[in-house]
Structure formats: C-alpha cells, structure tokens
Image 1: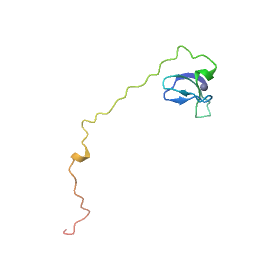
Image 2: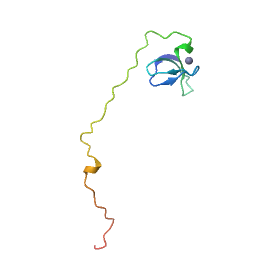
Image 3: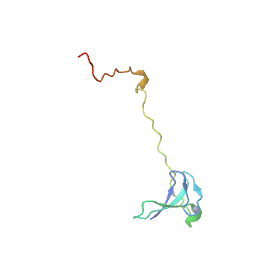
Image 4: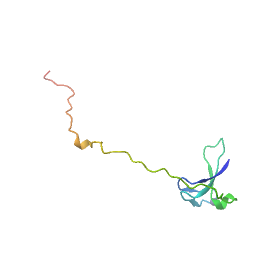
Length: 87
Ligand SMILES: [Zn+2]
C-alpha cells in the first residue's frame, strides 16, 4: 500500500539516503507482512506529491500540573527502626 504522508519525525529516504525533515511529504509503502515501512523522498517516488496532502498536525504539548507536588526535600525524614531492644 502506497500513501503520501507528512513525516512525523526526521527520516531518511530509503533509496537515496536524503534526509527528510519533519513535516515534509514522504511516500510510505507498507507491506502487510512487514512491520517496517519503506520511505521514499519526492524525488525518488517517481510521482508528483498530491496537492491535497494535509499539513502535519502536531498535538499541543500539555504539561502536567506540578503545583501540588511536594518535593522530597520538603518532607520530614522518617525514622527507620527495624526493631528495638528495649521492648
Ligand atoms: Zn530519495
């Protein structure tokens, strides 16, 4: 199966080894029994890049709310007593 996609990360063309930057069009060939996809740059693909190729949409980075996290240095140290002889 051949599909034109936007590179989600920096990849390399599998034919000419040209680096393909993130967001650039890349021809992805997938074979059902093969896990890895074969990548081709627009030059090696042998066909024009479709003009309807959607731009790469990167989800916004959502950082967690760390305002309620107490650092370990702020908590009092606990006494460690495996057993006591005076009992
Ligand atoms: Zn290439």
